[in-house]
Length: 105
Image (cartoon, rainbow, N blue to C red; front, side, top):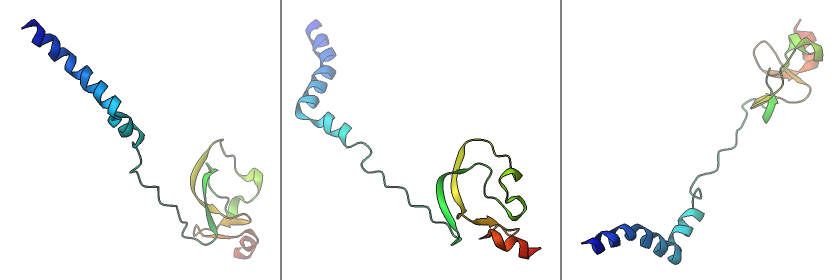
């Protein structure tokens, strides 16, 4: 009876050694994560926007705060769609060339 109990205690160890020697356990670990699909690329809807994975925390400049010192922005970044260089957000949240702000009056 004691021998049967001792053999039963060794079975998990024997199974592990068997899996390691046949490569089953190694292959299972190597294949982890291979079935995960790549994330879809983010497409901005406004043609004057670009995706940035580290854009300003305080968002885009607007017609009301175009100058550098108009906004105090804390450090850090966020991902999202931001206006292209030279563009700012108007009151409708569309990206427009900054020179057009003066004509909006």
